[in-house]
Length: 537
Image 1 (cartoon, rainbow, N blue to C red):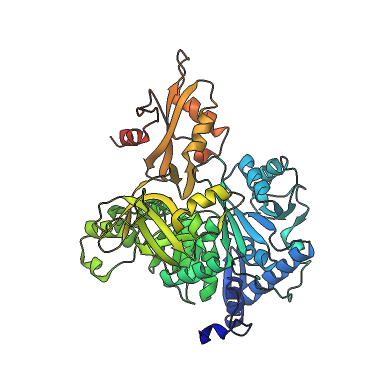
Image 2: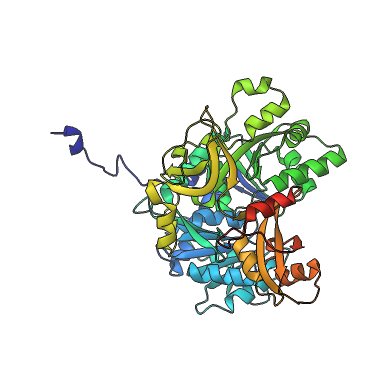
């Protein structure tokens, strides 16, 4: 008989993991400490906690129940940060939405996620108006009044007046099950319509704790929000900074000089961003001859930094950590942990080491490279290609209302990333190619199939293929290869680009169009590898 089995879970020795408890703790430990700075507004941890409890109670009084979706369309702001706590305090699921999306995509997300409430910054009132006009069931519209826009009557109420309907002393309950959903994030993936990635409370808690460890955060951390909070819930740093009692500094939009002033004014110690943000900073600060008065840790997602970027960053005062992850893995799932001996290497060799995607974060069990045919681990020889596969606690629940895609993503007991990589002898992973035709531009995913679908709507387009083209500012941008219908009139590339921009967000439209016959395999499939190679010649 196993006597250990007789010991049971009780309220004294077990509770569901949730990042909500992290805010509760910091409010007790650091009640008067600056929790969030947003322009001229400063909230202490005590105030932040009370406001979140109050808004959570207000939502419940409005009939928001467990499992309901509450969406928010906002740049980085104290309201966006509060929603990461207040919405799940009501038992609901927070859906943070990309502010760069067009009305049609916004309408799809609100409808697919069945949003009961939409908090929105008034700067985006026009796109919200167009989006909700197409919905059969409209969410309760709550405006977040900002200097960038004024509400003209679309919203039923504003954020602060809704807040006043709640009780600041209201209690909240942990989720019944830590596997309950906490957030919904949409990613474009490889299909036209975005997929709804569902996170759970357990994963959010562990991602927060993992990220604070990975980034070596402490109560002295001052974190600058250059990374959008709408992107993977800010890579879970919305919860991670709170976990250590650090200070959130909100930045509405990324302007290099605004970033520099915020770093110097507030003593910023940590920040995250896509390569485009780093490039903007290096170019502008380098042009102005500015350096940081103290080192700032910069976690860089997306493409690996070349040696020239590393050199410039270190000269200005940024210390780079390279992260790898996906929306499906709560953001960061691997990082390139620097080894002490790397510092003695010449910069070029050190850059090669740092460019690898690295090893798993603490919240995961494994990050492996598996053979794409038999799902067995490939040799750790730095040569044999396979697919990066992941398993562990900081992996999504699945795709909302999409059991087929969920089953495919989790086949053989692993989450399949679609990224092709090698495993080095030191067990550091390095991506070599993308199996999915997703273009990562400025940290945002662009589905090549979505762009191709729009191209095929043009009356003169016979065939189209879209691939990633290197871009100094954005990392990657879409490039369209187009074959015109026979005997069609001549058309300029700019006309194709304009056509696409009228039907989709500008950042998704091709930046370059190349006309000509498209290379194909014997079975008629377009050979995108040849098209990609032609761009590098």
